[in-house]
Amino acid sequence: MIRFILVIAFVILFLILSIPVILVELLIGKFNPDLKNKQCLGIVQWAFRVILWMAGVKVTTIGEENIPVGEPVLYVGNHRSYFDILITYVRVKGLTGYMSKMEVKRIPLLRDWMKALHCQFIDRTDVKQGLKVILDCIELIKTGISVCVFPEGTRNREEGTFLPFHEGSFKIATKTNCAIVPMTLNNAGAIFEDHIPYVKKTHVVLEYGKPIYPKDLSKEELKHVGSYVQNIIMETHEKNKALV
Image 1 (tube, rainbow, N blue to C red):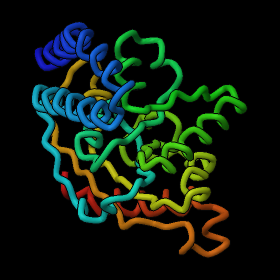
Image 2: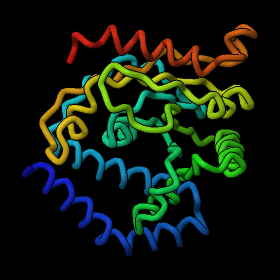
Image 3: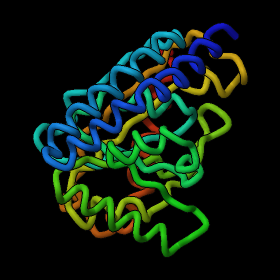
Image 4: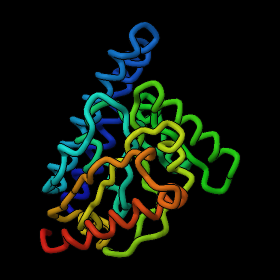
């Protein structure tokens, strides 16, 4: 329970004390967007590292060299925990907008930091709005900003199980031919979700797969690219079970 209290206290303090910071960054963004992006990324990555340290999360990272350098990518991962975002965000190579559910947009201050980092909020009940978010993500890729999605659409409730990957989010890659980078997380649910409200010291394995370029896929693989990527993540998850 102490870890949970520490994490919540830090998040609240960070959000409150960072009010003037986010206002300054938004002002900087009007004159120097690149500087604002770089500074916001650094600030949030620092905050996430502090939270992971407080939570006692140790991460073994495999295959980080597979992430293409100097080009935007579509990160795709399985989803077991709120901590998935923290674990993966501290390792992104450049500015990356995460796709989040619309409900998060209701949280004051958090939504402002997310907007500053080009995160996109999707309403899973509104097909038209969901399509617009995909188009906005395509534009992010075109401007050099990576995108991260968890295409199951929600968190799994049991380790080793997977929900179907929604194919729509993969249009971000197929329409831009950016690399798809599979991210496989093992044991993330053991941090918090498996024993709410306790946050427990946990070892998590994160593996980045080799980049997948849509142009290199066959017509059949491209038709079911979500399933293609999911199979890679499932196989990697099974392989890494012995490491946690």
